[in-house]
Length: 399
Image 1 (cartoon, rainbow, N blue to C red):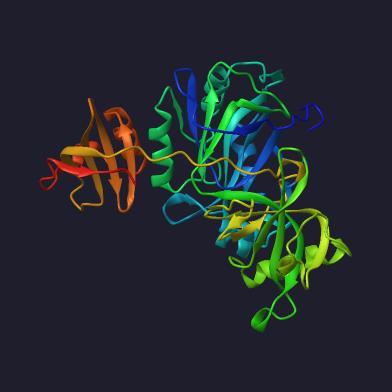
Image 2 (image 1 turned 135 degrees about the vertical axis):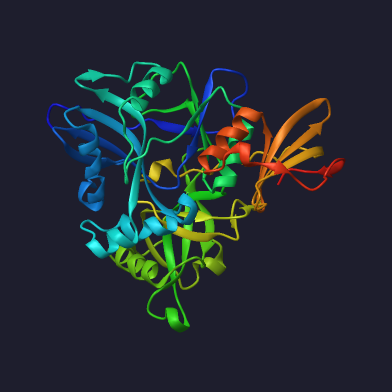
């Protein structure tokens, strides 16, 4: 592997969806980042922090077999999928701390590597190439297997429509990438703009409180912090839900050697500081939450898991989600024979577009080509659609 250069991953900046042409939009996978170094059929995987995680995901040796004699450095995401091929960070937690997962665990919770960029190929540095050229190289590598899949890209697509499609498919959000931009190793750049759907927040654990009842002897809740705009670590609230017993035991092991006698942040409210056990602010986790309070606290957070692929300096408050589009009038509709998928023709003001409906999920503002592509990815032939029950004139809003 000495011939392949180590390349720090490029990082996306959080923000609103970019407007105008010149962008591609990709799904944001709910997994852990990894850079794959592949040469002579051998694979080495490094985390975002540069830790070697090759042995944690032995099934990704398939990457070497797919590339054969070619040498490449690939940026991507390691993901665990649940039913319907939806990414599940909760399932991935069962693998993320296993340096040598047993066969039974690999069978129960298999992982998939989704390479989304090629940084070095057959001895040539490709980072200076524009996104479009790198994407063409990536798609030409034939990386399609049981544990390796190149994710779909949507160049020139309407970002809001793709974001709604991501919501329909159960993804974490989208990343908009500037078509003309190079890959910027180790840099956070607005050339990649991430827009989340699920409201999540990376947090730093600064303390814990003992549990009661069946949690006796284990942490019952965690005290959290984030960095503010002035690079000061500030209190962000506490989380006491979302834990499994296995998570609590793991947290107990991780927190024990980090103990300290004083809080690592100022102005912790008395009700939270009482009976707290303080720890060094180095352990990174992630929570789902409803919103932020005026005091800068997380409202109704739920624990999602540890993030060993993150560094403390990157833990900052996430941006607000984009609003849903206004209502429109349904002028007609088609659906699959079983009624599970529905395509509506919608008029909003002077615009006419398509809406894709699947259960409680709605993808709004689509052109027909995007509808056809999304249905095809779900295994539905658009030609199989038939006229749906009359819906003309019905006023409806996007979910």
